[in-house]
Length: 161
Image (cartoon, rainbow, N blue to C red; front, side):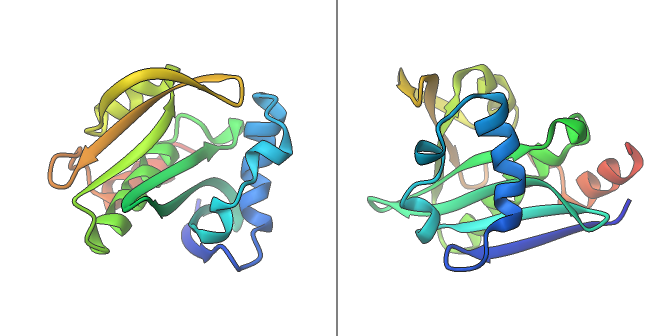
C-alpha cells in the first residue's frame, strides 16, 4: 500500500476531503450537511491521507479566537484499525506546533476521549452537544503528546493492509 499525505487550503478543491467526511459524518453519524460544512472549512488547512491514490482519512486545522484548533478527523470505515486516525492527529499537531502553537484544542466526540488521551490530550470543561452528539473539549500541550513517529505510523499502516 502506497501512502501519501496532502495538505489543502480551504480555497482549494476539497472534493477528496468530502470523499472521507461525507460517508463518516453525514452517512454514519447522520449529521446534516449544512452542519458538517461550516465557515471554518474556508479558513482551515485540510489534511488528506491517500492509500494507493484513494483518500482514506482527513482532518482540518485552523485558528479561532487566538487558539489553534483541529477537528473533523475522519477515517473511512474500511480503513479503520490501520493507524490512519493517529497519523492524522500527529500530522495536525505537528503542523500547528511548527506554526508556533503552544497548545492545540479539539472538540472531540465524547466516545473518542480515550483515543485522544492516548495521544496526550487532556479534557477540560463540561461535555456539550454539537450537532446532536456529545462532545468534550480537550487540549494537547506542545512537547507532551505521544511520541510515536510518523515514519513508524506509516510503516504500521502499510503493513496492516
